[in-house]
Image (cartoon, rainbow, N blue to C red; front, side, top):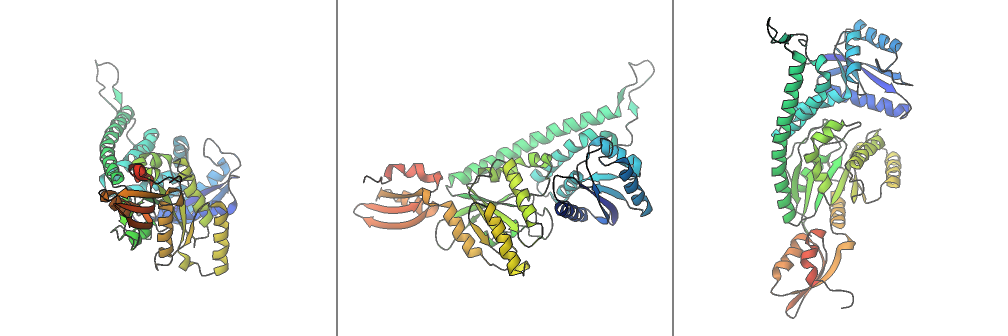
Amino acid sequence: MPNNHKAVLVGCADDTAGLTEHQASLQELARLCSSVDIDASELVLAPLRSPSPRYLLGSGKAEEIAELRRSHELDYIVFDRNLSPSQQRNWERLAACPVMDRHEVILEIFRRRARTRQAQLQVEHAELQYKLPRLTRAWTHLSRQRGGRRGTRGEGEKQLELDRRWILNRISRVKLELSRIDNRQSTKRKRRRAGQLPIGSIVGYTNAGKSSLLRTMTGAEVLVADRLFSTLDSTTRTVHPEQGPRVLLSDTVGFIRHLPHSLVDAFHSTLEETVLADFLIHVLDISVPEYHECYEATRDTLRELEVIEKPTILVLNKIDALTDEFELTTRREKLSQSHNGPLVMCSVLKGQGIEQLSTEIRDIAFDEAGRQSYLIPIERYDLVALLHRSARIYHEDVEENAYSVTAGVPPTIAEQLEPFRLTEEL
């Protein structure tokens, strides 16, 4: 897509959210468009009482937006809603220009950001699913037919049918290759599980500081950039605290309002890091005005992944960017009312709050529920080493021919140590 394209961005204000949230979503769409070299020259927030099957909006408002596009000589119309294939075609006929929706813009960003083979295939799979019902828009030669010859059976196969068959075949091949990659990823996950370390998954709204946090906590060489969806691939690294056992942390793809279901499905293997994690670290940019909408959008995605009940640390990042102490306190109190778990004020950029976060990670990974006492024979020092490596030691002592240890034990090693656990009767 060439640089310096200009567009009119169209939002739809219905009764599903307040005016402020609709405006924030439209501003976010402008940021998304800038990531694919489209400048938001005009912003239109149109009232929507009941969706029109033809244009989504009413015909009068549609004519008004089309005329705005023509008079300002803009290149695109971009909707902050997902359009049906027929609505998209109707708009392009009316406005005589390409018309995109939020779904298509996000797909284009993902396509540009994908670096690994797995990410590229995941994005391609989502793109093909999006294009399949829009074939008559995607191609200019669909009226052509091939194979038609005098004396043969009929005029031949329409190009539309050939294109549809090609996309379906390509989807099958992409899914097959993704399944092979996913099998290799599953093997890696099993090896990490065999290492018997607790695993935490860093989640949050895109550009909240997840990759920066992973880099600060683990020293991982991951891409850190002030842009939407800078990271599409999961990265897992080990936290090496000065005291206490190690913990694995995984970074994941960022979430966003109305994240297309096709991308959630396509990135299922990447998001599986979140599903399989023992606990979550929800990173939230507390400095932006729409912080609460970002918080809820992340929780909606976690709910869709069925992990909303996992133990979660809420990290309020970028506190250095919000200089109003009263506003910062107000936002924290509002979030504490809906978040059931530890909450940490943090500036990853300046290193503020990292020590407290490390403590909270150890507490949540080795919580009191897993605190147990063991009497381990001296010849089983391998189990003592396992405790030092994978558990949080509260007390230890050497008795005659045995080690006495009290530790916070993660579920991954509890069964292995069960024969040596001291019961309350003892």
